[in-house]
Image 1 (cartoon, helix red, strand yellow):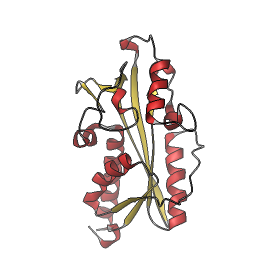
Image 2 (cartoon, helix red, strand yellow; image 1 turned 180 degrees about the vertical axis):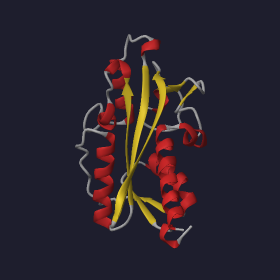
Image 3 (cartoon, helix red, strand yellow; image 1 turned 30 degrees about the horizontal axis):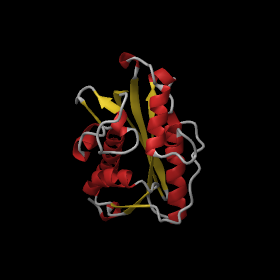
Amino acid sequence: MSERIQNKLLLATRNQGKVREIASFFAELGWHVEPVPADAPEVVEDRDTFAGNATKKAEEISALYHCPALADDSGLEVDALDGRPGVYSARYSGENATDQSNNEKLLRELDGVAENERGARFVSAIALARPGLETLVSFGTVEGRILTEERGTEGFGYDPLFFLPSHGQTLGEISLEEKNAISHRAHALRAMVDMLKAEEDAKA
């Protein structure tokens, strides 16, 4: 791997769960991954798509700190709720939303909905902005359904409610290693890493 790839990569997030997850993917490229500084400005997520929000966050942070920046916008789409919470997943229960308050609101809105009508998917868009280069965007999804109560203490966000029929467990019950193999963000991150490797190979 070239010296150019041995870069600091700023993540446009302070969510330590995301930092750990993303760092595990970029380790193979030699990137030094770290979250944005504590005094970094909040980027307003005002786009109406996951890709739009991710691109805006990555490009603003990259321009501010003059280094590569990566951002994701990930969310939960629930069939019975016409795709909600979607791009509002992180603040579903209000501006001061927490994982717990979001999960509680989701359960309230799905109260009485039959198990076979609780289909849902996690969607992730990853954007990598680099000074002087085009922004790369990748995508990933994972299908499942929403349970009536939380299960597991791993992961974060809606993970304890998101049941994977293929595993018989929620995303809150599987290890980080397992999650990195099958999650929506994992698929998007793997696609991004593959795009970067292809760039390097093309220049070799």
